[in-house]
Amino acid sequence: MVAIRVDGLRKSYGSVEAVAGMEFSVDRGELYGFLGPNGAGKTTTIRTLTGQIRPDAGTVRVLETDPTTEPIETRRRVGILPEQGSPPSFLTPREYLEFVGEVRDLSPDRVADQTASWAERLGFESKLDTLHTDLSRGQQQKVMIAQAFIHEPDVVFIDEPLANLDPLVQEQVKRFLVSYAAGDNAVFVSTHNIDVAEDICTRVGIVADGRLVTERSISDGDAGDESLLELFLDRVNGANARDVPTLEEMDGLDA
Ligand SMILES: Nc1ncnc2c1ncn2[C@@H]1O[C@H](COP(=O)(O)OP(=O)(O)OP(=O)(O)O)[C@@H](O)[C@H]1O
Image (cartoon, rainbow, N blue to C red; front, side):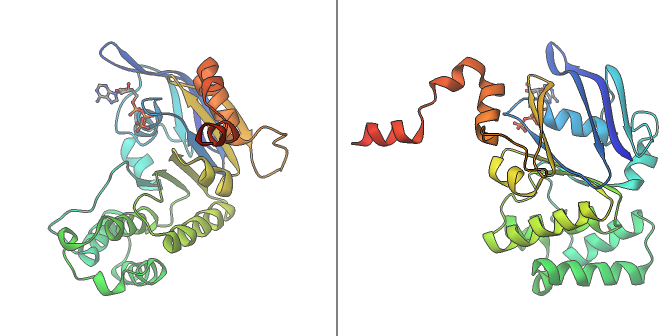
């Protein structure tokens, strides 16, 4: 079943065409990676899908709701981990998750259970009552991950899920995302990290200049000889990619 659909999406900021005819769809059960260089239009697409901005043209649907006209209904049913999002500095993780739980219509008992289970899973139990302003960037990121999943949404949008996390927690979060998507949910991850995309995603869409330029299914092992990095460089950089030296050539330069 289709969870996210984008058709002919266009969005400009003044004279800058950020999204220029974006098309793709994501089914439930998929962990979809959105890969693209800086300024490709990824965040603008996510902001449209989460009802934060209105498209100039085209249609977007999330769980058959229209985030443009029903932003509250869409946001009720999705989880969002925004780019460079951080929890309010003047709250503790426990207070913030209570607040998010209330907005999400969860019972106090459910919020307490979810808070305890996320704090244990990501290892921030000892920081639950410390103000965010006194937490590290990685600890704040863990709280942001918890708030995105606290209501167990059917669709989750995540910008750079592993930013600032140590390798151990990165592995735990990666495994969690894979299992969450496998439970008939759609997880949409925007990232610059090609290795992570290749490692966890079931399918990857490569974005350049505001459009989806190609897609690759990762899970079926049918990727052919070209690595995801090569595909990315080829599609995004075009002719310039061929000017990037190979590792062997770089070794040769050192010799
Ligand atoms: N609020 C804004 N006002 C004007 N231009 C904007 C605004 N937001 C984004 N842009 C421009 O739109 C284009 C797409 O930006 P967007 O943030 O969607 O890209 P991105 O793929 O998420 O990039 P990154 O990987 O660097 O986060 C860029 O050229 C950017 O400068």
